[in-house]
Length: 211
DNA sequence: TCATTAACACGGG
DNA sequence: CCCGTGTTAATGA
Image (cartoon, rainbow, N blue to C red; front, side):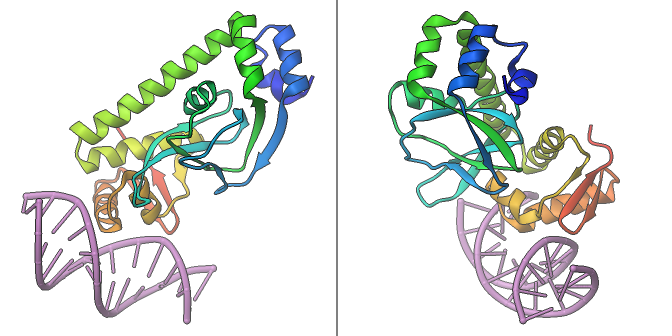
């Protein structure tokens, strides 16, 4: 049994399933910035995230993007699940936010385990639920909140996943994720700095007090 | 009123 | 020099 599997999924799955995952899963290391899933791509395996952070986003037809949510270790991509089961194409794009380690599971196995293991079924259903909640939160932000609130949400979320109050990101990156312009982000960040809620540096933002 | 686009200056690597 | 940042002016929704 590989150590990484045990630490991240040991509590979740029964021993027999862990053994299968260990035998069948293929470890894959990716670097920050690598594209894991393209919009329109056919998928033949689902990833279990062992370590790192994955950014999942939606693209419009012009290639403009909007961030949907982050995935952390111990989680999987709900979109992959629905694509795999119907052998449909991906509706989303996934990028490695940090250097990450994935365990790739072929779709046949993931379907077989659905009938075979209760803990696997629970895991898949929980994943669906959690991702759906994340997407709803994002929709709320877009529909009901102004950009300044969206920015604060974004910073909080990012810091949570980085497990650090210091976020390494440029204003332009944030602008892409929130689908707005850098001018707006710079201005809002400057306001937040003036009210002592963050500290701005080149290529990084330090969260001081975000309510 | 507020976002977007273009443009410019400043400064660090 | 190039890139990230801060700011402004013009324009439009």
